[in-house]
Length: 282
Image (cartoon, rainbow, N blue to C red; front, side):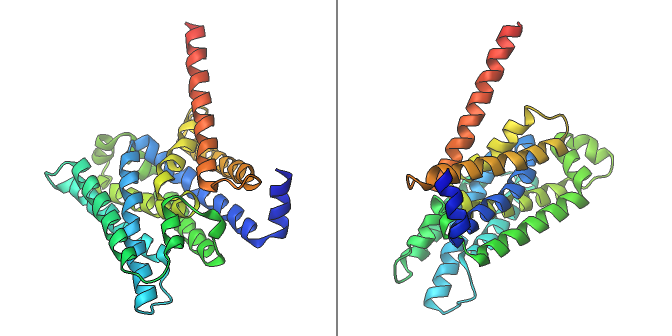
């Protein structure tokens, strides 16, 4: 870990990586709490994989048509928001099964991304790294985008905290009290989509679900209110990310995968420890 802290001080790319992980932790802890409470982690997986389509199209337009201002993450934001709205509307108003809609969006997004990447001249390793994450490639522009998305998420959650809580825990009561459940459910999916984009930068598309769910799941075992869960979820996510970065640096391991292994190990140990304690009590 000493080499890791030395690298943070001396190399800008390591400082960017640490800042990215901390920015991702904010969205992860806040929105992850809602995702786990509402039990929509499978939906987050569909959103995560659909963003590859937006990234592929943005990369194609950038390279082939000279849209140099268009970054893959811009395409990811658009694709994630579109997927969230489609899945949400199908879930609320269509006779189609929700899991069918998620599977369709998942498959179409991935297929579009692969098609456009294959048609883009040159080497697309940087874009394909979003599948598994490459936090060491995060630039200052990525950090600005992540901070902006964080600000939008925090502002929205602050304004509609009670409504989101009602939608997650008691929809029928919320309807009786006059809360527009459909609207806030869609808004929750939009927040999840933005968080997916942020986490894609850190751990990649494949591992988004784990980092979105695990810190919040661990936090819920030690807290009593949703605000406490969010706060502890943010702190745990930041801790997992920092430890994962530190452990991966010296042996040159994939940072995203190491972060998930740290989070997963803590979750498993706490779950097993809780089960053992329950057995001893009874």
